[in-house]
Every structure is written in C-alpha cells, then in structure tokens.
Image 1: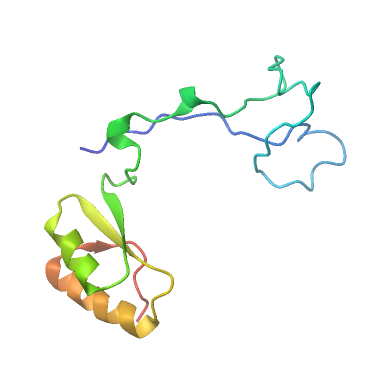
Image 2: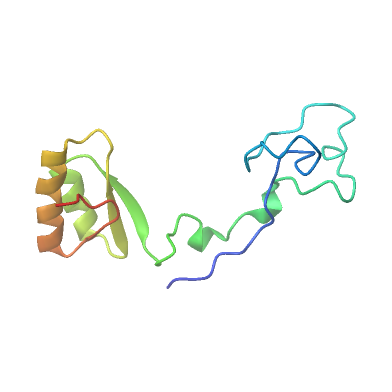
Length: 120
C-alpha cells in the first residue's frame, strides 16, 4: 500500500545565499514586499510553496512505512486504534512516563506499532 511520496524543491528564505546571510536557518517565510522578486515569481529567485506540490489524497497523511499515525491519550483511544488496520500510534506529549509505559505494554500485547516508544 505504501507509495513513494513526490519530491518537491526546498523552500528557502529569499536571498539565502547572499553575503552575510549564512547564519539563517533553512526555513520558509512568506514574501511580503510588493516588489519582491520571489513573490512575483521571477526566474532564478527560488521556489515558493503552492498547491501543485501537494501529495495525492491516498497517501497525504501516510508515514514512510505505509501506515497512518493515530495520536493516543488514553486506553480507550488505544483500543479504538487497535481495531483499525494499517495504523501506528503516537503517545500524546502530555502523558506521564508511567502512563506511557502502561499503554505501551497494552500496545505490545495487541501488536500495534508505537512511534515514540518509552525507553526502558
């Protein structure tokens, strides 16, 4: 079921390679100026995100291993996720380590893949 996701160019800050800009991190900021060359889509000024780079509906939320990720806060949500197929679970950040360990034990019994496992 796993399909390869389409690649897209890296979207960078305008003027990324300019002198004195090497301290900038790789990130995207929308162009605001009315005369900005990237905003008016001049050639050679880099790529801007647009709807054409979207993935097909069938694989949009899919992970690299071909499963869909479900966020789990409690045991009831874990059991609901177990009934679905092609699913891996991620424990919510607000859970305590003790609760995550308990839910992880249940997930192992149900043979559900856990994305952010608790280290023993």
